[in-house]
Length: 153
Image 1 (cartoon, one colour):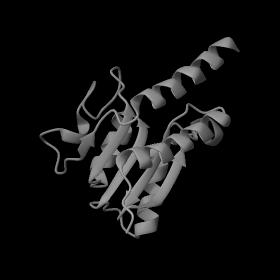
Image 2 (cartoon, rainbow, N blue to C red):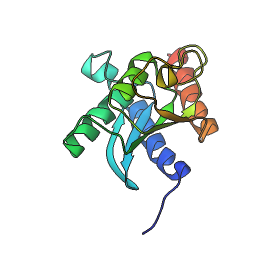
Image 3 (tube, rainbow, N blue to C red):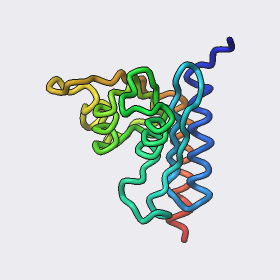
């Protein structure tokens, strides 16, 4: 069995982020992985769906739950190109996700240890393992290029 590493799966999440950018969305992508296989993939769709909750993480979680036939994702890892916000981090905890691996940190509103620590909050019934800054430079560059283009318009 061929085993893939965190960088491999983060590159798949970055591909989703590129799709988001092509569609005029903030370039954030996510893939959910179980047993070394991608079971869900999503890009931000906030603008397309006119839905503030249509973050890549939320969409990927919903797909992963459907694929598993259960809301509990205790053996699932989520790769996301930017540190999840409070809403998404709360969903990760509620879904009992095993681990979140993110690209670029978000010191203003990241909720996996940067601005807040929802995923490791002492009072929560579940803690999500966090692996930060995987291919952070690639994720940062994608975001910077996107916002440069937006500001030019």
